[in-house]
Image 1 (cartoon, rainbow, N blue to C red):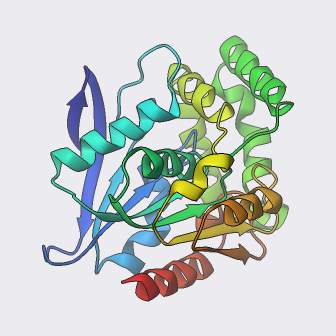
Image 2: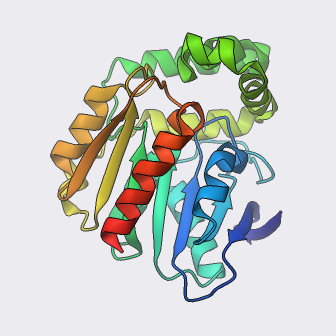
Image 3: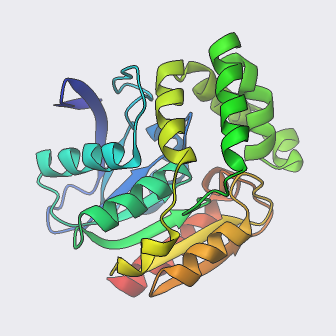
Amino acid sequence: MEKIERDGVAIAYRVEGSADTSRPWLVFSHSLACDHSMWDPQMAAFADYRILRFDTRGHGASGAPAGDYTLELLADDLKALLDALSVRRCHYVGLSMGGMIGQQFALRYPGRFASMTLADTTSRYPAEARAVWDERLALVRARGMDAIVPSTLERWFTAAFREREPAIVARIGQLIRSTPVAGYAGCAYGISRINLSARLAGIDCPALVMVGDADLGTPRPMAEEIVQALPGSRLHVIERAAHLSNIEQPAEFNRVLRQFLTSVS
């Protein structure tokens, strides 16, 4: 992977897809406790785009400094990466944390996204969710990332998928396990405090919102709240999928994303 440095922190990225510089950019941003490789099921399907995948601060091959990361900080990391690669405008796809970073970025840097796809994410957590995050962080700090692997995989995939695709589930389990505690905690601070619903009306770009029908982490009502608040957005529910809908139902995810990108191009 290539890297840029921002304020002493390395941000790792990978450029793939079309070598035709006239083709549009398509940027993928991953969930908490994953890395750019969670988008592997999308790569062949969108190889006609110039693709940019990156590891969010605290994850994968990127730096994981100690301390709290805000969504503004993570959005600024993305801007630094886009600027370094001269990506003036792009189609953006973010899942879970990636979707939260996308919302913050679109508010902070209007006009940079040609379109925005927000999958299995939220624009706001209720106040009582903070206690759940605090409990999770206390567990990770006391016992390491291993402690949350089983419960996270249960939230992220349906029981049917876990039974049918143990190798894929094990690979994602390894991504969770290898996430630095400092990176997990830093990002969890920012995403647990997301509160953007009231500001989404200020975003002016076409948006697709997708959610797995069995997503327990960011369930359908959270997706519906985004659609109600975000002008020009549309909702698609992916059946037989939990939180990582792009992995559990890649054919459907890719079909709907392709249809959306074609409609906005």
